Image (cartoon, rainbow, N blue to C red; front, side, top):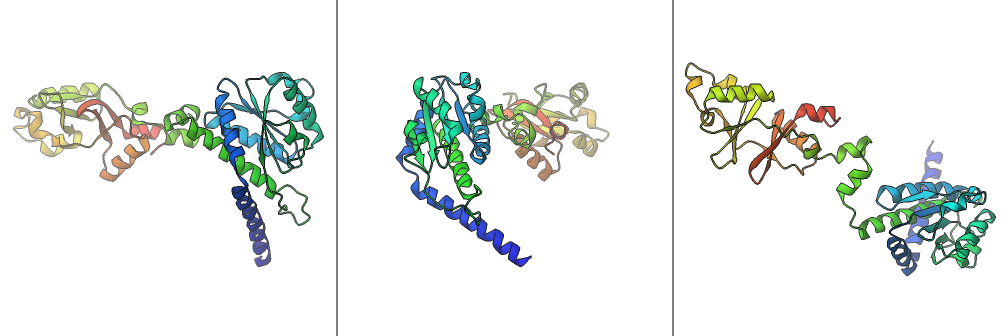
Length: 316
């Protein structure tokens, strides 16, 4: 067991060394690649590679698309059998190959050069067909694979993946891609839930009552809106309190119906903005053991969010 663990750690150590070598090798050609892709605003980044680099290419393509750079993967062998028609001069080809002389890539490279399609190469061979065909070459340092026979692509594919991440996130940064943009592309799954905002879940038919309103009016408003609470506002329309079912139970007495909303309310209620992430609103409700939060803008009510809305969205 111990020897297996030590061996596994030695593999990771070799791959870390590969990433460090890639870090020190990265130069202005990387900046040129980012600029080239950034300027092609109407096209796609078409990622290609054969074998293990191809598998890495699929992941890089998926990452590019997920952070705002439209992309798809094109298998070089399929490209030679009609799929070259998917490429236009509005696109950039991002081609991964350690040797740069992979035979299956050559027809695609020839086609790209013939029709003026830009190529970004990620390779370790500056004298390769790929490098000589490319507009920009991101040159990888020559480093041994973690494989004991220096054969199975391991360290080099890890380096390619890291370069792909760096490209995708550099473009994200250059495009000022925001959380809202990310949310639009990731509506499902755990990421979608994390990016939900209060405005996505809140109700706008907020039960609102003025501070001098009678308790009869309060009860009617709370019953009609069915949120178990009512927002109390001043004569200027600003939030000053909240009345909940709990407030009604705690303060009911023989003179209850003769009181005003201001006499029954809990002052200075918790108020959140519609731009807050819904997960943060859930944390506030859990921390204070409450089931609803008023949503305000410029101190005036614009909605209400209930814990049940968050539960339905899978947040609580």
